[in-house]
Image 1: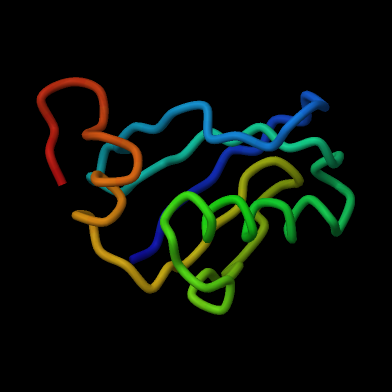
Image 2 (image 1 turned 135 degrees about the vertical axis):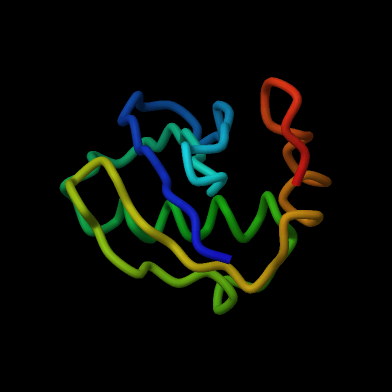
Length: 96
């Protein structure tokens, strides 16, 4: 599954702040990370946070592209059911 991640540097602990579906029905996650998004360690933080949240090995989460410093495209070795189980269904009437 491919998804987008919007990274916000806020300091403190890394956390998933929420998620939604874009116009095409693809997941878009909003993450807070302690590292600055331009720092290479932010990518590692995003991968580690998603792997931990989804209970997957880090090798199951791959960075496909960094469109900007704050918007990343990732590929995860999981389906929508795992995503919904970990994060709940997205806002609105959407279900994965």
